[in-house]
Image 1 (cartoon, rainbow, N blue to C red):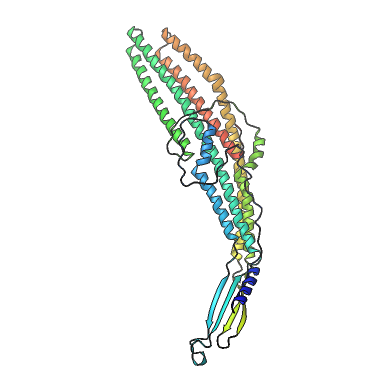
Image 2 (cartoon, rainbow, N blue to C red; image 1 turned 60 degrees about the vertical axis):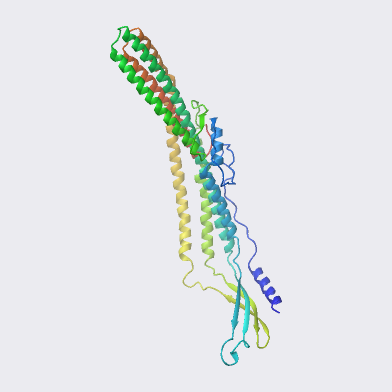
Length: 443
């Protein structure tokens, strides 16, 4: 006899639960940053083994490896899915509750035993008013969008990290080539000096000086090789590997390129994900305000069921309604905090725009200064140093210059070449820094 009334009450409560809701419009990154990168696979395998490339690799190879295997980026992708799962959870309606109640038994007199027992079975359901469920879904959905923007920032940071690590390795390779050449020149100079000592043309002390210079240059080469190994490991770390088995990276660090005007670059700051993320953050803050305001309206709980009187065998319906009374707690503090959080985000957005614009201006000026230095080294200083070194070295063989003159000319030449390599590194790192700011490839 209970079946039909219970089904009727259950259907009524399900109808009271409300209709389906849709989330707010997404404010996610439309696509990967415009570097024409390989798209990262969002499916993360826990059993993935570190990649160990061998032989020579290009920058495109290194970047693809990092995007596919970097653990930091993989963690950010997982966080997106975690936020999406929280959104799914928020979409669920409150579960109904079933109440079973027994009354009027085990007492005294006519209520002794179970003859007068009354049994009530009822379902209760909380009804969310003021569109609370949809508004809470908006909050968690925008949190998912924020996670997507955080992943985009990590992807862009990874691009910059790979680019700088790759360029450092290119520089160390060029530095080893230069120091290897210097060591060969030192060996040749030592042999020449020994011949001149044997011929009685110079003091034996000059041979000792040449041996010292040779030893110093051998140490410098060894140090450069150690720096190359460190640069290899730094690059390999970007794709999650502790070891670097690659033999060499291939690329041209000595390339000429220019920047667009500073005003053009400043206008492109709007592409920066650190700034674009604020649109989702503002929407998230506004959604939090909507939730806080909605909680002012209390949510009633309705119940309905049937009661059976054992003594008479009669059945009756029971209905109930409970409603919290917002007398003391009207969610005032949370409402004010939500509005202050929005104001805070607005100020942070203004501060971020100013900071990024300032950083871009500094990077632009640094690029110009370094580019001027590179031009001077390439076109004037290094050619003149090479000419002076050849002239003094030949003059030394003819007895017109002494040994210290040769060493000084050699030192000037290779210090100029060394400074040229460091300037190239600074130039490319500054360019990568600008690319990170505008989220666009410029070289």
